[in-house]
Image (cartoon, rainbow, N blue to C red; front, top):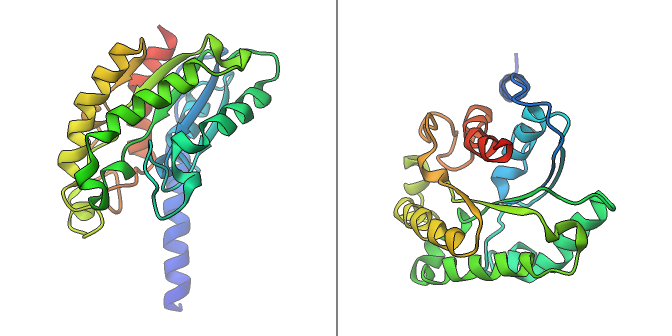
Length: 232
């Protein structure tokens, strides 16, 4: 068997296993409308927004996540990755997606890319940018979003594989600090908070291939405290 074929089959098996895990458990039949906003960890077939859909099969989950997205930095020279710069158009899309039905929750999981080494000297801007983002949402003109409760999820840890790279060096301490500052921002702005840095059972070393992107097991662990908030 050719090496390329073996590699393809291996990747395919990983995908099948991930999807199987993602489809395991329904946590509630409750009907909810949820808008999710994240980075690359929200984009995969087994990502945390997809896990929410599996756990809450009667919920409407509208996901606008994008690889490379930050809270408020110009990442990779792409303005569409800066949440602050595109929040108005994303809120408009979310409003149009649900029609006249109001959202119950907006779940925001960002910060991993704001912790990149290139932004190391600008970390004091991150919680301030998050606060601006929250207030843009709370003051938006769209009726469907007006009463939605916001859930802030701080970024998960960096694994050793990620921190060993120049791009993400030192990011572990930066996302840890975000967990503390994001909690304060959430409290000041009447939002729920979930510490992605301290999720019970989430092992960043074994639940990522690269120390950064959660696999199906890690994504499943990430949503457990989120779902608990949504159902209470």
